[in-house]
Length: 200
Image (cartoon, rainbow, N blue to C red; front, side, top):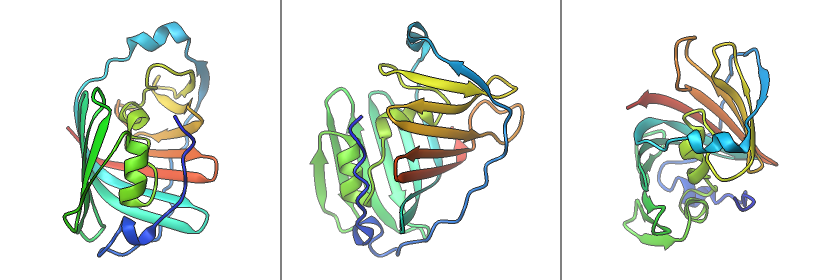
């Protein structure tokens, strides 16, 4: 994944909705066991459809933005609707990984295209969102194709994942849950926090 360009355009990010400062998200402590994943195990990952709704925030130095999201992942397609914390539409994005094309429609009705999600989300939201990796990371799994390491908790779930220069820390709602509730995703000088309110 190209190095994230953490340049924020706060006016473009939440035009009409205002920029919301981020609150600290507390992650529950987990007992971790180092468990690097061998390359031959990467083929075991199955990219299945899902829908998720929740909240996402990003920060670099003193720049911060917070949005709500509704994401439908049906490989190779992704649809991502983003609204302000007050419910105002920020952008509606869709992409096809096989075609290498991502499109956005902003609140003012303008449309734009890009070759990848990182470029498009930076233009539309003011921060680069690694959607390709996040479609696996949000479910507690590495995406295939690049090296990674993981650490697991007592229940055998991924509690820490490192891949493509990103570090993902997971928090689960209870000991029985297999899907995470919170993710803290860090890249040098850049941080994303995700809270999933609803899984489908």
